[in-house]
Length: 460
Length: 111
Image (cartoon, rainbow over all chains, first blue to last red; front, side, top):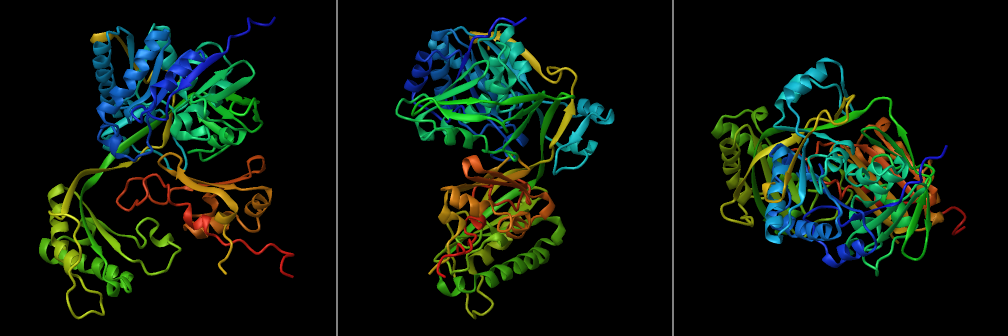
């Protein structure tokens, strides 16, 4: 017997990131089109390990407050929920609390009293070690098996939740869900999945809307609305002047994914091999044929970062054509001279610190992969030093300072003076981090690694 | 005259992180003719990518998508994201060696 047909669900995605900003009129237009839920991502690993390692957000509080005001007032007026994923950029517990604090301020100012769920995703290394010992943690390529010391070395570890903890929070009555680290897609898939829509269209639509307007012809003009039904989904930009085309929508499936046909989520794999993208009109696209294969084992992906040392940066610049003509020889001499002078004055062996000399304007971005060979007009020289503590990193940069000012090329018999960009020359960058986890942990209960706390309005 | 490159035949060539441990690149070719050139396995294959980016050939994945005129290439990030020697945090500028790869003069012309 056929079950009751499920009603379509309209997901409003205002932008790829909370704090990136949008025109509030686009949100109003989404509500007028019948949005059932607003979902937005607030973070990822994209900007590097610092944000997770230090548990600090990439966005600024004022921008997040501005965007939350736009969403919370709109959602409260329409009586629909707001879901925010990966709060505070990396989704650490302090990131969730940071967004919750800003949301509480906005609600107090706007006289709103919404029920807020915080979902914490931070993981305890000792608890994860039990999973490791039980053989429940597995590497994802290109990383190898995990060692307990790696877990212990992380300053912060988060698990990327699927839709289930978000659905649990919504079922508990949350009008605002502030999630720690979540898969980019879980944020938008949660509500349609809760309403009984099939996993294929729900996850595929979620992937397409994860970056807001990026799947449209003008990513600068605000977000999109996806309408998910039993057979597929349609997608349209919130700005009436902007269009989605089958190509712009299909192309977004490629964005930031290693494999363009399959995407693993905690409970299975989205498969878009047979997806068909067709134009409904000149700005709305229909997608059908997306599938979802439920996995034999439910898994949660872990992210963790640790300190690699402390960095100090120095920056000078070269305009003299004589040096630029022999730049690689100059850079080689610089590397040799820095090691020599550091050994001589600070008595540090080469392996006790590290530095990178980058020639911006020559080959700084691509390094050895740089295909161009022509002489540059001017070059910025960045010296980035990494040492076990900040004082040593700065001492090394200070020892390198006379070289950064005066080093001649091997062929020159006089001292040039190079163009320092600032005084003082050294900038202390603090702790530097690296990602060390790319592993999944087997879980039998999708919510077991996450903690949900509920509060209301000013109590948030 | 300068050589024709993949970029000349493409609408867009881009590169980006796919998580902290992978780089992915896409060649959005202008039309089916450009796609045929970029998708030609004797011209653009795992070995060519391994040479351009100095990565292990066996780690390179190439996806050819004729419906979009797209060739997509993924491989593990050779330098850990955010480490001392990572000069491109989002791997957003690493498409250039691929984009400026010279394509052979179409056979049959100028003969």
